[in-house]
Image (cartoon, rainbow, N blue to C red; front, side, top):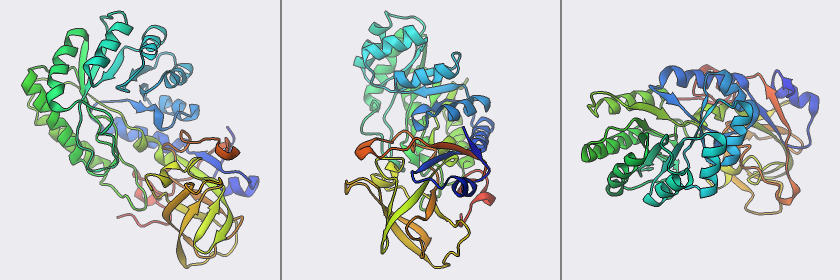
Length: 392
């Protein structure tokens, strides 16, 4: 992968007509090191967030070798890079064919479930295997999450007790897990999830081998500034202590966004300006999906290329390059007032989901990926590095 010192240097040399995606290795290393040092347990990277081989290899180099996968393709991606990596199939609804292939071809022994029917599928598809690690996923509130996952997955408390008892009969090791939703903005959600697990433990008298607090750990955006991750870990540790167990189960988390969001940026070019609307060469059918439907506001900055930039700032909304009017990003994206056609912008925090959501709709697709060594526009890990943004 070609490397540049900064995004500005990249643009100056390449002057790309297509959007380009940039990855910061040092950013991934910093976030991975933070989680390894601070989180009180094992870290499973959620591969769906960014499965690019460069990202995965950097995580391996940073000491993370356990992965939360949701498909056979993701398992293949991980095993191709490191055949010894442990993959945990934490998607709680899987086909029989995928369960069978994961277990027999790739040696995956860890599976998640939230129904009796899914448990039966796992047992039958693995030919009544005796070495399974099975996680019962419970439903918890997603009230503080920007993206709610609670409607699709998770057994309610009254169902989870019976399901845990049944699952324990077929598992070599059993776990309880939950997910507070994506981009969770308050650590109280993890406290409530652990409390729900405590209720299930008391009802069943079953001490699980694992407690999995899931993902949802946030990153920073201009309009979404969470508490420090230290506070999240502090609350998790406190809630675990309140379970009053003689021996605490092994603790697991599944971060995605918080590990890789800062590492990625997309550089786009302005095709047209209509007053406070900017028509750009990437959009919701490309790397900017989250700026559309969930309306996540990415940090943005104009790449000056040496020209004079207006000190007056204006709020813009974006339209992508396709012919679809849904290719729209409300923002607001705050940029210098004199931005114009052919100007380049960097949009940050796209290490999470930017690459995975790309389509080839209308024939617009760019696979130009480069490494850069500069700092991200915004960061949770070093506030001094935040460029052009005041972080509270």
